[in-house]
Length: 192
Image (tube, rainbow, N blue to C red; front, top):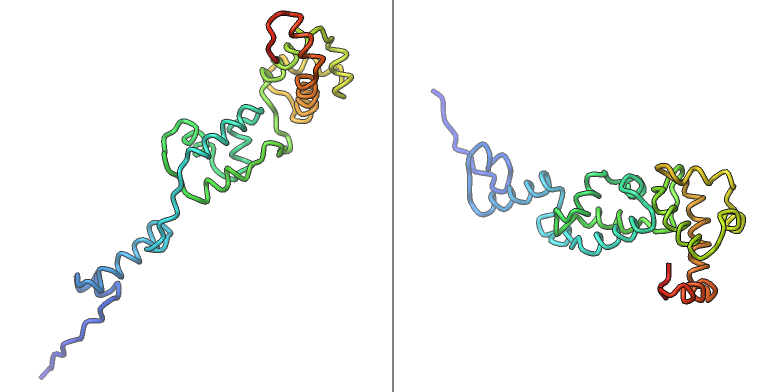
């Protein structure tokens, strides 16, 4: 003769929830906590993981304005290019805190080995300096750029080092009263 024993349920275990279909409040709470940790990688009470993407989007815009491209930002932040693009497009209003921190850690003066800047930025800077009467030879000598560089900026990309040298000269000239005086003589009165 076999005797059957009834088991006492071990509430609060995943086995009880899954195998024995127990939906008591203790088992349900334990299941929710484990699901949150497993599927979302967070603690059940962690509500601070998402942050607004607006500040991050502004920072990305600043990085793009000074010459970074999406690939350089993604490489420096250690995230995917698709994440950078989605943030720029505004696909998400909130983002994970660690992703936001990674993007915000990329500083504007951070040079990436082999990083190249779009040539259009350099063309515009050189065009504005030449519009003030400066020659390319003078610009290259003052900035410390090799004169053979002149053909390289018309193409697609310019090295980060050459961009920084030209940008520093451009910023110095646009802040100086000499360029402002030249612009006033031209009649438009605006800074290049």
